[in-house]
Image 1 (cartoon, rainbow, N blue to C red):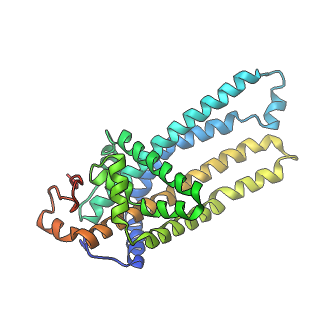
Image 2: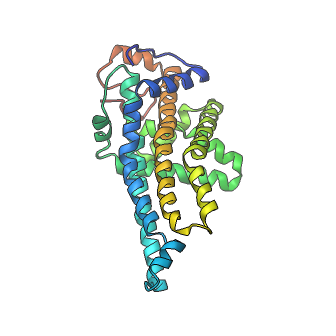
Image 3: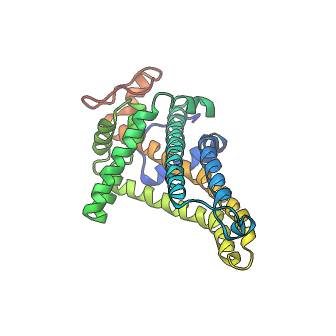
Length: 287
């Protein structure tokens, strides 16, 4: 941002700053989200093309598959899909966090430089995401509300991991410390994000599946085309909505640091160097 404004923010100001950052740098954030998501789109289109649809079966009556081979193919495809999705997700998350950090601290960045900073960070960030998922699932198994509470307390673990160079466990502990007495604000951020996700699905994905449902019996040969359109619509929805949560959590992370650690004063004293986190044992901030 051209005007550096590091100060404690209300929830409304956090959301307003999130939308302002996204709107003013739309091509940057959309590009960071889109480039990794192209891998996911390519995989989804391949799966849609090879889906055993009624119309396709009719056009290839002599083609038979052994059941064991089909199961192996499904398992392999699922594994490949999971790997592709995780890589795309980690790159998009990390690139967006780095871009928000640069912009929020009055600097400039590009799509390439934001994504390139993820080199060497994938393994660590993967550990953060997995550990975060286990922690939230553990809370959900106990009861729904504890799981939601844990998710809210761990909302800033990814910015903490990347911007302070923390390991998986340390990043979760760091987020839990930062978000003390702020779980309610985190919950509102998650709630707004879910509203945007469902709105995007209704706009970009649901209409195509609705058409597929209507044409399923009367025009089975056209289902493949509509499946492809549905996957393209999902891609656009993910690219448009995906950056919101990461931008919001990054802004929230900086707000918590300003509130609890006087990060604004630290940054004013050392705007281009390494800045301590203000808590014992935490790693350095920004290089």
